[in-house]
Image (cartoon, rainbow, N blue to C red; front, side, top):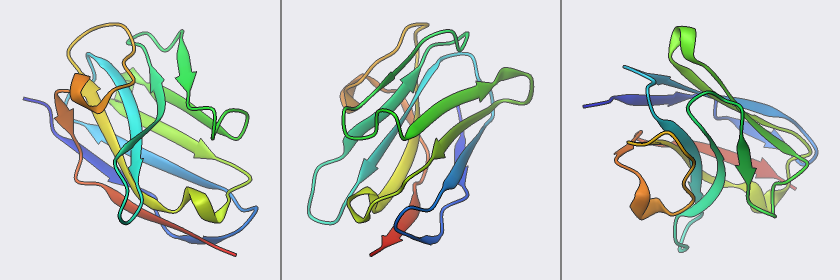
Length: 121
């Protein structure tokens, strides 16, 4: 069992930056970030493999967001720059029991409780 706890979400203005963190009880799997806006389905944001050598992004965040991990302290990060109102939502970190990346919510085995990010216009 893996416990995941997100932190770092706040209210920020358009164009601002935020860094989300996800503290894991263990970090032995590939990881990902998802988000869910009110009335919408949970959507993929970014993924990273176990070693951190490979990353993958949704088109909507490519070039603005960066996923990274520090396995030494069991922490996953999401650096978010040039934020837009459409980035608003609850952000979740997730872990999948394999070494390679995954992009579908159904592929993931463990989820954090989520954290609110609000970007005001």
